[in-house]
Structure formats: structure tokens, C-alpha cells
Figure 1 (cartoon, rainbow, N blue to C red):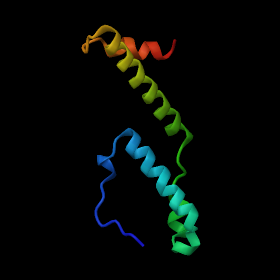
Figure 2: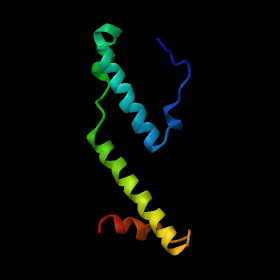
Figure 3: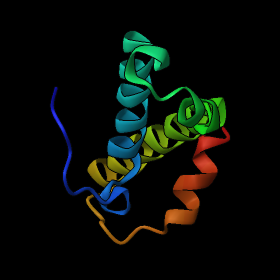
Figure 4: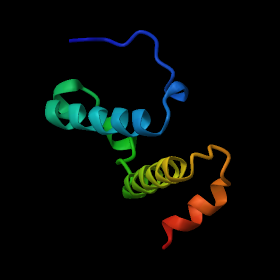
Length: 89
């Protein structure tokens, strides 16, 4: 079994964080907490919130809008607020 000796989740950003938590949860469920002798810890580990998945979807849409606007206008300094407003359209 692979063991992580040093890890700081603070270095993970958006997609990386989401993917790490998803993969970690899948590993825990595949191996069963009883088999890993981590039943108490597993109960304390909160399930991956649905809210995080929806937030990641908003971030992906935002990035697409900003990229599309930059490609359309060629202006990298266009206000981010207007791109955020386009998400609600």
C-alpha cells in the first residue's frame, strides 16, 4: 500500500482539491473503513459536499466566459465583474 509521508492540502487549488477529495473518498469506500481499521476516522470525515461540485461548475463556466471574452475582444484587462454577470444570463 502506498503511504503519503508529506502532504499539504493548502497547496491544492479548485480542481485539484475537488479531484483529490473525490479520489480519496472513492479509495476509502472501495477498501471499506473496517478493512482499513479506520471506522472512527471515516465516520468523522465529512462526505464530499454537493455544494463543492456545484461551485466547481460555476468556476468552470466563469473561466469559459472570461476566455471567450478575451478571445472576442483581445483585451486581457476587461473587468471580471462583467464576466461574472454574464454567468447569470
